[in-house]
Amino acid sequence: MIIVDGRVLACERSAPPEVAGRWEFPGGKVEPGESDQVALARECVEELGVRVEVGDRVGPDVPLAHGRAVLRVFAVRLLDGDMPRALEHTSMRWLAKDELDSVHWLPADKPIVAELPALLT
Image (tube, rainbow, N blue to C red):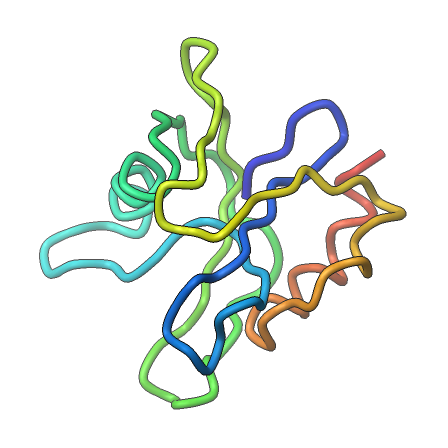
């Protein structure tokens, strides 16, 4: 997840239709031969047009509903003043601790949202 000045970046899904309008943290699937960290850095370039340094894992593994994958969350740092742009999402918002419940999160992201208040101090 990307946290800047006590706010976390949330992205609104545009597709597929069953999840359009729901919110998530940036990231995506790990391709064959990639580590979780390399995949996250690649996804940030593709989804947000930013380069990042991937840091520590945040929170527990979250098994996804279909049972074939696990969501892993890492803290990242934006590099060289890059600012995210919604390249693959409908919109983006920087959410403070008191705004975390203002968006409709994807079920997989809800356990991570529960961990966020401690990180957004």
